[in-house]
Amino acid sequence: MSARISFLKNPDPCNHLSGYKLRYGTDGYKSFQSLFSCFNDGRIKIKLREIEIPRCSYCSVYQKRLYICLFCRSISCSSHILLHTQLNKGHDIAIDVERSELYCCACIDQVYDPEFDEIVVSKQLVGLGMSVKSGADVVAVRSNKKRRLDSQLIIGSKFLVSPRDRREKWSFPLGLRGLNNLGSTCFMNAVLQALVHAPPLRNFWLSGQHNRDLCPRRTMGLLCLPCDLDVIFAAMFSGDRTPYSPAHLLHSWWQHSTNLATYEQQDSHEFFISLLDRIHENEGKSKCLYQDHEECQCITHKAFSGLLRSDVTCTTCGSTSTTYDPFIDISLTLDSANGFSPADCRKNRYNGGPSVNATMPTLSGCLDFFTRSEKLGPDQKLNCQSCGEKRESSKQMSIRRLPLLLCLHVKRFEHSLTRKTSRKIDSYLQYPFRLNMSPYLSSSIIGKRFGNRMFAFDGEGEYDSSSSSPPSAEFEIFAVVTHSGMLESGHYVTYLRLKGLWYKCDDSWINEVEEEVVRGCECYMLFYAQEKVIQKAHKELSYQVISMAEAFPFANC
View 1 (cartoon, rainbow, N blue to C red):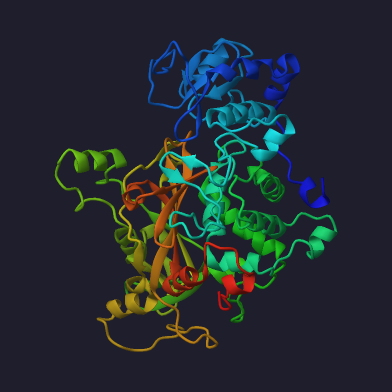
View 2 (cartoon, rainbow, N blue to C red):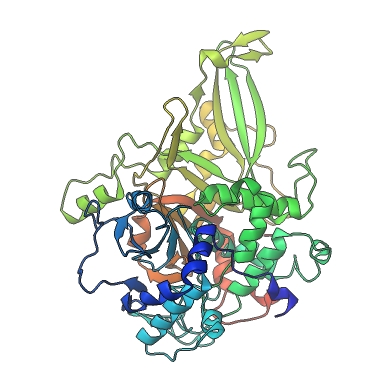
């Protein structure tokens, strides 16, 4: 194995799985081989011959995520799997019935074992009428279940074909490749899919602007997150359709973010912020944003950085104090008071019920709420320089400068410190595929405040003089990260919009979906790009493999 590939190893199993294998080896795995069934969509699921519909042995529910104990074959739902372990000492390892993945009940997390994966893959190969390889050959073909086994495999009514066969209209765009779940890592996979298909980032890495073979940190044996991303971008755009395991990136991220180094499910938004911070740090950019009019030139801030304007106005004398703060994303409050869940929306749509559009939360409503004037409480009085004493005031946010890539984070998770409770807001949110951000710019907000008078004020409307045109306020969506399920046991999926078509990236599975599917999801992070960036991407990104200089000429991105 070459030095470059040697670090791409699978994560170590937990102590409970190691203990199980020490006692039973792989015999327990093999006893389940007859229960694995390959369905028409290519997925491997557990199918019990004596039970038509698997149900939880404790509550008889069948709609929730179900697990079958590797020791006694008892079936438990996600709410009772821990109870089963407590009542049956040592019954720590189970199999996800729907996804055929190992689950540790003690760690409350998915775990990965290549020997288990080999058994699942062998069953899938047989089910799809393909030749079965053995040992390391199977693991080399696919290091996780649910993996597509060939770039020309038929999945249901969809075809996955080689990018070389570009004459076929149903060819998937180059760069679409699944990412294996390494144990509750859907939060990471979802964000990586969005970043890999962000044109400025794709241009940066594929044009060799950070080359892992020339990186001084790598030659000194130091961890370098941009180098790990260089490996991922190269793998995603290699033309290989078999899902990829980002194990080394996960390991490096753990080393950089030790407080998040765990096999437990993490938050996609926190991972996104943490990853961009680590990229910024590893690129060695020491300049503070907007200090002495100098901006950080790392790829993180060149792509995602914008500038917020905060105006605090004294309610007594009307004087205003203005400050500016950089941002790489905007978190929006989702008002759930009159909101509808996705289930409510589907019920109204299919049962002919009354329209709920008027009361549904909308993205424009969230942005209006973010930029509205807010009166600060009596305990938040600020010292007014004009009055010479503390006065009550109001605060209003606006966007002074838009980034190339706009990430909008929908706050679906609420945590109450007083009540010591947490909950998820599963209300449906309407959002457009084309977004005009002009109403939320400082020039528009300040203009409305002063009766839409036309006048100039400090810093507004400025842009890079080297650019041929001012930045656009028109954005197009290119990725949506969604969260389904409950607060404790949810799942992240990304929808990508490439050349006008939508693709669902569910860990190692990628399928083309209709626009209505995307609109009906529980969006958590919305990724928009300036219209000019999307237009360049559509024009230059081809289904065929071409040179990097030809494919990604975003000189100003």
